[in-house]
Length: 160
Image (tube, rainbow, N blue to C red):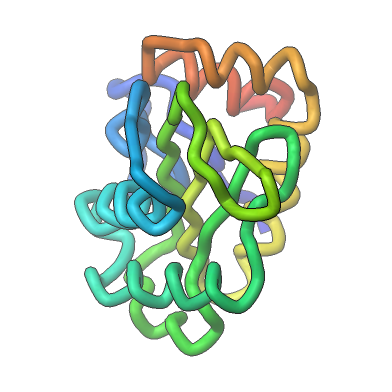
C-alpha cells in the first residue's frame, strides 16, 4: 500500500499525509516518559488523528513493554484494543534536547507517537526505523531548532 508518509510543505498538504509540520515540536521538556507520551499523544489529538482516550492506551502499552527502540528514539503507540480510538493514521514527533528517561538507562531524545489503522503501523514503523538508523541523522534531529528541518530529515530517503 502506498502512502504519503510525510509532508514537505504547506502547499502540498494532503489529507492522507502521515506526518505534517504542525505535528512536530522541537525543544520540548518532559519530567518522565508519560509526560512525553502526553505531548506526542496531544499532537495526534490536535491533528484529528485520535480520540483523547488514545493517550491512555499509549501509556498502557508503555507499561507493558518499553517503546524505546535505541539510538535515542522511542515510538509510543496504543495497545491493540485502542484501534477503535484511531480516526486516521498519523504520527507526531517531539524532540527532547535534554532527553527523557524511558527506563533501564535509556534516554529518548526523539519521541514519535504512532496511530495506525489496520496493519499500517508495520509500514510506518519500518519507515521510521529506516529514517532513524543513521546516528548522524538522529544527532541532527536532536539538535534542530526547526520543525521543517526535522520533517526534511525524517523524509530523506523516502522519495517524497
